[in-house]
Length: 299
Image 1 (cartoon, helix red, strand yellow):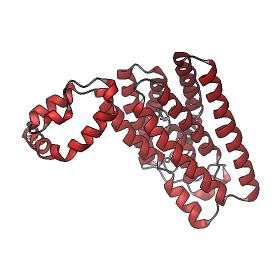
Image 2 (cartoon, one colour):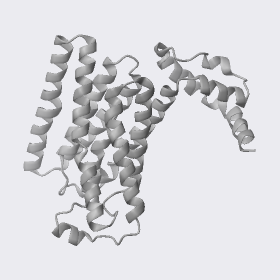
Image 3 (tube, one colour):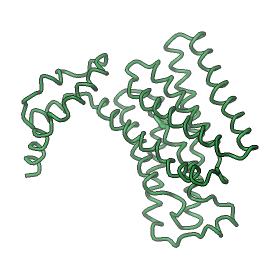
Image 4 (cartoon, one colour):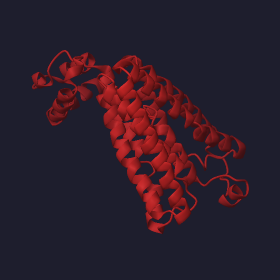
């Protein structure tokens, strides 16, 4: 009965999704992984459509899903920045996670542009570059004078000077294969360096036996994102995407296990947290956004 209902829904909804399929297939026509044209599927039954889905590139479908989960992770700090705009102050928030994430998404975008069939990598990370640039700009706008100056220096050194140096050296001095390998290694190193925040969150949860400082939906989407991109990397045989996302998936799974264990724990008061040097949940959300780029992430 469930299969019949699913087939009926697919048959009824196919005309609505046909334009989207045409756009996606056209954008990735160079992949040549698809056995039939999407336009030739008009009028097919639900079962035929399911057969088409089986024949389609699994990695492409996973990549599209990964784009969606990555975007959800990229927009996770919106609540924090709405608070900054509303209060016209960055309070005790730190700019470093966003400056580093801007560099990470820039490198992953460069990697996707250099990699054959890297459309799904550079599109999502290109969107990440735009969002992170907005976050950093808002932080600079509302930060105190000394913090603003320090953030501007960080952006100039990390996001502009360092990235420009990497681009010039790899683009001018290396052939395409070596360029992809070098950028990929740099992406892995930068993404892995950002896993300190998830580990810190897990330590806080275990010590205080409370998930007050570990937002569930952010943890879940980062877990899902790492899993999707990890499987995508397996099908694409992309070790540079697979390593950081595989580790991110494992950390996300461990965080979800901790959430299930301590979900009924007594909340640890903010007053006590401040006394013991524990950051507020918004601070942890800011740090946790590093892991979303493990793609990728990070993504």
